[in-house]
Amino acid sequence: MNFLLYLLQVHIALSLLFVVYKALSARNTHFTARRVLLLGILLFALVYPLFRLPGVSDALPAELQITLPELQVKPDGSGDRPLSPYQFIAGVYGGVALLLGLRLAVRLLSIVGLRRHNPLRCLGSCRVVVCPEGTQPCSFFNWIFLPASALDNPTGWTTIVNHEQAHVRQMHSIDILLGESVAALCWINPLAWLLLKELRLNLEYLADRAALTDETEKRPYQYRLLELAGADRAPRSTLPFNHAFLKERIAMINHQRSSRGSLCRYLLALPLFGLLVVGSQSCRQSTAPEIANAQSMPPATAEALPRTTNAHEVPEQDPVFEEAEVMPEFPGGTPALFEFISRHLQYPQEAIDNQTEGRVVLQFVVDKEGKVTDIRVVRSINPTLDRAAIDVIRTLPDWKPGMQNGQPVNVRYTLPVVFKLS
Image 1: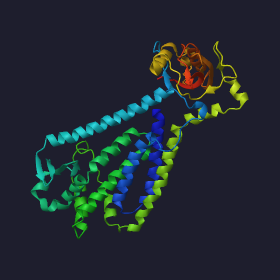
Image 2: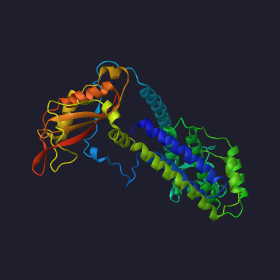
Image 3: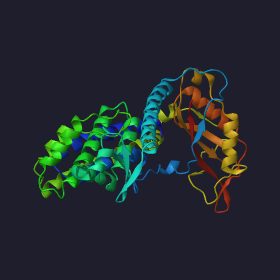
């Protein structure tokens, strides 16, 4: 699949589903449902362009049923070629995404370094990294980072520890890493960064709720959050995944819980997921309809397509089979056929200079004597590329003819040839 097309579909899914998420989750307290939807958006956006709907037929018309595997042709690499716009855009986009990926790796290494340079203590099933004073509490997988005063005075830190333990217990670090990775991949889309912010904020909501489960009074916890926010913070690079969201969290702590019935609104997102899958499937199958349309052209249009024959033209009275009991066989099989074409088919220099690429679809008939005849183009890209593909098919050696009821017959084949510059 074209990588830029894949990215475009990822961006479309992230954008549309994020807007839907914001509409469905406005000021409600269904944090678990929010988390499921957010993770679903991230995973779905990455996977759905690759998904293939079962039961959706991509079969070609009867005339095109016998289709050889697609053959890709590239220039031999000799000489310098100008950088195509596609290559330039892909290079810039990929370079920025790579830099953001390296930034994420550095942030992860900073957390590992913080762990290695500070003592470790056990707190139940969690491991507490004792950090210098002023370090903001945070967690990463099974590690909880706390200042030394938190262990010297555990009573005053009970709710904060419960908050971080909730992050560990509910494996929130996985959500953060997935969100950071998708944001790096889709860096040009501001909605991808807003979605990452929503993901982080919702995880804080979940941890706040867990910290207040056994608390009858919410105000001491809020005061504790304000106290920590006013303390001297460690350098930002030390705790790269720590985000306070203090104002939003305090507002949500005091927000009235939403009714269970309002959970049903999240079902409204399902039709959009389905529509995106169908749209992606349409993109994947766009080639087959084009071939079918070419085959069903009216006579005047079809005659305009390049058509050639070899010396042994198929007589008009001889039927041409679309499928025979015993199919024709190229000497050495299909791999040998592809090797022959790849060795003899050259990317036209004119097409290279004009940065022309695309898929040419040919049809040809293997007649009763094994000769390749009746070569025609059913999908044209450029006359130069069409002619290059036709010329190499005309040089094919004789095949072992196909058989029907013990008699040699004419059999039609379809061959897609992809000319690609990169």
